[in-house]
Amino acid sequence: MKTNDSNDANQHIGGVSRRDFIKYCSIMAVSMGLPVSAGIRIADAVVNPGRPPVIWLSFQECTGCVESLLRANHPTIEQLILSLISLDYSETLAAAAGRQAESARELSIQNNRGKFILVVDGAVPTKDNGIYCKIAGKTALEILNETARHAAAIVAMGSCASWGGVAAAAPNPTEAKGIPALVGGKPLVTIPGCPPNPYNLLSTLLYYITYHKLPALDAQGRPKFAYSRLIHENCERRPHFDAGRFATQFGDELHRKGACLYKLGCKGPETHANCPSVQFGDVGAGSWPVGTGHPCFGCAERGVGFSTPLHTLATIKEFTPPTFFAEAFPNKQGVPAGLKAFASGTAGLVVGAAGAAMLTGLGKSREKDQHGPDSGSEGHDQG
Image 1 (cartoon, helix red, strand yellow):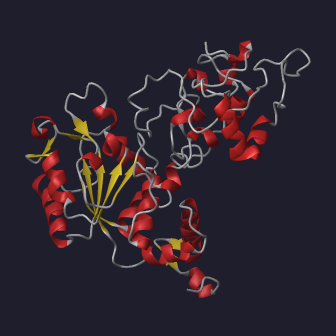
Image 2 (image 1 turned 45 degrees about the horizontal axis):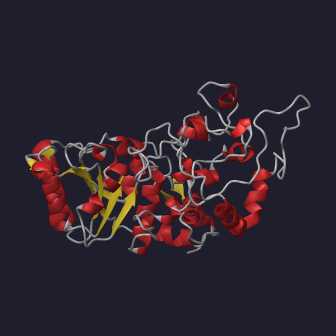
Image 3 (image 1 turned 135 degrees about the horizontal axis):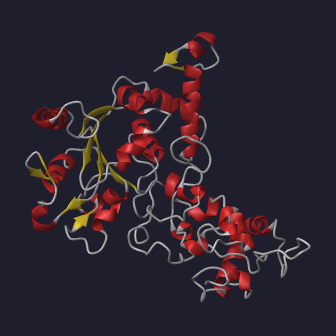
């Protein structure tokens, strides 16, 4: 395909110029760890008239996953539904209701056996044969089983669908479970979060449409392009962590100045997600919990969100902070008191440049301390 021809560049796809469309597809390719050149292949797949059918099921959920998708701007929800995929069934977005809506799901299964993508948000209750969630006279468990067996691939959207989420939180009276625990033998990807970022779903769908397979997944079935890094690694408050500047209560001086929220229970050090780099709502920087001054809840990490009390200290995972920190409170001359091996302004940079070898060495020397930094000064106690 030629992208430098003037006629080619002036073509429009869904109201967007071809040049801008390919540019968007190239950005999506890079976000998934693919070369920029893959953008052209993605663009080709997207404009293919054979749009993949999608059936979206909702069970024990709050509709937050769908609401998050509605706020995506590139593409918008109407571009997604009308141009990229064929959304054959969704309770939340359907114009039809009752028997007419259920007929649409049944007809799509019949006409697209082994070809459609199944997206599920919400957990599935299993106690007493699943009677705690019923739609059109059928339990969620029945609907899932009769739909999933004919799907080409399955996407568990949100933490509830991925591993139970809030519905499966103790004491879990309905014995709710995530989709991976109930469905086997099918390509399945989990996209946890409460709600997850809509672009993690859109990127996964684009990858599948283009390459007819799911992207590379981690051990929990999450796409690596979105869940391979800890939130803590890319957090905008990370320099404050490295320098030892922690808010200790909401509204204190350091909290108002944007200091690290670790001591308020931030779960960023043990939660894998791309929240700091791909934020919500396309409204600019700061549109995620930590950006607004609230600790990360760990909603995207199994065993953290909905399992660990909000304000307990996170366990530092796969990361060891510098041996020494700047004091949180500078002396009268403005020079941090007690500053030792690292300059406060460059502590994070030094750690980043030191590489894995340095971090491994520091980790061995601090195996006993699993609850964060401790420099031995009053600015770094855990209280």
